[in-house]
Amino acid sequence: MAKRGKVDMNCLFFCKPKITKISTSELKEAYLPNKKGKYFLDVRTKPEFSSRSIPGFINIPLQTLHNHLNKIPKEKEVVVICQSGMRSSVACKLLKKAGYEKVTNVRGGMNRWI
Image (cartoon, rainbow, N blue to C red; front, top):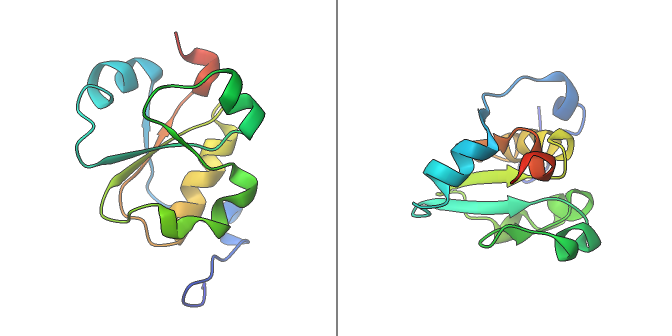
């Protein structure tokens, strides 16, 4: 069990918190047109984000995410994307363990973004 304010790193890989998964089509058609109540998070590196990103997404690289949780509102649904879906999956688990209720992973990431 994680101590208050700390994330249990072992549980990032072994626990199964409920995380919503959506496709890039769902992101484009349902999520981006209605941004109310959502926080869009891109966990790729800064160079990856600079070379190609989706308007409205905020870049906080996965490697530094645990140091920037205070920048992400807990009352909003956090929609997370990366390049392929792997880093965003880890980020979603970290967010759930840190107490975020509504966390959504974009399957396939930027590789599937048209």
